[in-house]
Length: 110
Image (cartoon, rainbow, N blue to C red; front, side, top):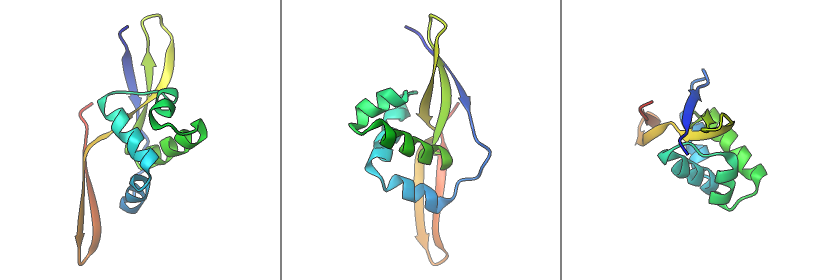
């Protein structure tokens, strides 16, 4: 079965502290890793994280708000479609200095 995806992105600018807060959660990290190799549905992520669907949706929303995850539509050969999510970053670098904490993100190629 072949699938195509179409990405949508939000316009807000992520806050470095918010990104770090989101990554402090094990379920969110598992979602980010799982979606780094391609789009996954919330149902697939619920199975992968061994968490409740409510928890997975909360973590998905946190990752979306922090722009670490993007929502996309996955189209199947039969014409059906579903919402899926995929990681938007390849590298996240944290620098700590006298000026504070700086987070820089390397985006994935689209």
